[in-house]
Amino acid sequence: MSGALAGLRVLDLTRYIPGPYATMLLADLGADVVKIEEPPFGDATRAVPPPLPSGADTAVHAALNRGKRSVQLDLRQAEGVAAVKRLAARADVFVEAFRPGALERRGLGAAALRAANPRLVYCSVSGYGQAGPLASVAGHDVNYLARSGFLGTNLDAAGDPVLPTTQVADMAGGLLAALAILAALQARERSGEGQVVDVSMFDAALALMTVPAARVLAGGSSTSELSGRHACYGTYRCRDGRHVAVGALEPKFWEGLCAALELPHLRSRQWDQGPRREEVRAALAAAFAGRDRDDWVTFLRERDVCVEPVLDLPQALAQEQAATRGVIAAGALSSPLRLAATPVVVPRKAPALGQHTDEVLAEAGFAAAEIAALRERGIAA
Image 1: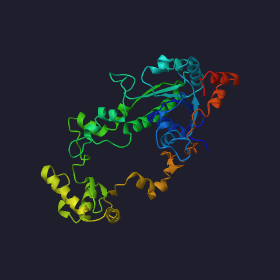
Image 2: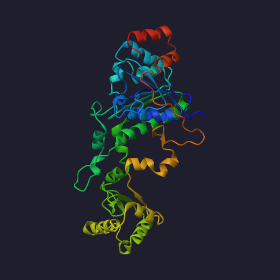
Image 3: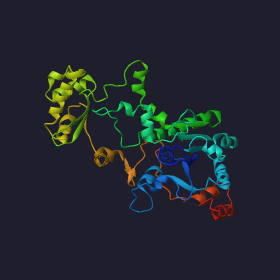
């Protein structure tokens, strides 16, 4: 069965995480994603350890590039740029992740490509977007989280920012890029015209702050009941040194938790402030310290009070819920997308560098002699 995006051609000039994650989602949905990589090494994630047991790829590259085809072209040479232009003339979507202005200087900017192919959806993925004083500034996930207020509102007990161990802004940026591309394709169905899509990891990180930002813009504080200050929402250490996560926000859950922990006198003290708030937290901490984590989870599951175990990643991947949802396939996370009538396609593994160069160029009308000449001059590989 064809995926929802079967028949769509996507040219992917992105690297690292945000852009490749976005285009992988499109490939999961059935789009033909052609990954353009520059010689001699291609996408830098091909060198990020650990390697797969086969030695043919790295785990990170494989996890971000399944279902794609790889073409190796040197964009520093005019013939390589000309080849990409020919590919773009037949494409539906063009996704790039260079610094603003870099591809314009090479003749691969949105104006040039859309002049030749007005139906093209041209998506730029960058740190701070195509405009603004930081547009040309380099950055990584931690920088976008810092600028967005994400780190500044996620503090530990000492008041220091807590760094997430996954790329929050990068992954959110990839998700927003895929969403925006789909919206632009739908708009094209009505207008017949493509458009330019500008995705910023800074914007993506800021979008994750929608609720706290709403409070600040209304004159309030960004600190909320989700900050861990209140006993009803946070983590607690159990007798065996492991932790549970409590999310008993609604009164029915909080009251049920107090009853289960044999702390009925705390039912009316969910939102206490100051020293009284710390008394409530201390009472729950003492209660949870009396049993092992899994004992608590089993005991509280039947009481429906929003308490779950804090798992490490191997435990999370091994749990029955993950198996039931089929979240692992071919040694990596599977697509998170679930569509009943047009399910995600059975993915090809991530391509070898330049694996499909000849195939894709031939589809774009390059004669065998042209392809051979590009290879001979080191423009294609």
